[in-house]
Image (cartoon, rainbow, N blue to C red):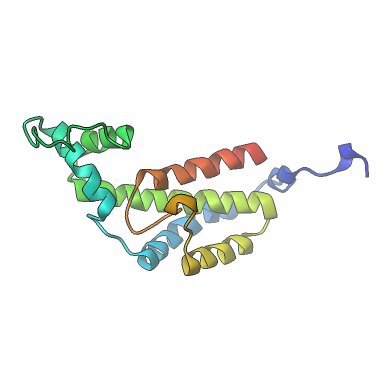
Length: 170
């Protein structure tokens, strides 16, 4: 078979999806999101939240923690802190973190399902992988996980990285 006749990795995605398949592509991750969160749990006030809060509170009210050395240092994730400060003006912090956590879990599931469909053309691989990741967790070098029981900035970046991989492969 000549190289021009070899199907590409994205050839499976060139087939037009039926409307119910398109709906299922969105609905399956949406239905799996609560199950994943129930399996992982959810905690507000985990160590990462405790670390971010002095920076958020200091930016919300400059007189608060004015003499605290930690609150006056440069934040570890300045853009995340800026976003939390902005969102805190409209919604209480626990709700902001919960909504972002749910959205990031859904986005990881959605992007992973799309990436697996592109690479393997079968959703069974996605479901098997999801089971294994929930069963044995996903700790990477540096102890950063793909997801967890609380929202941290690198968890929000995972779906963006999966999207980049999807676009490169497609």
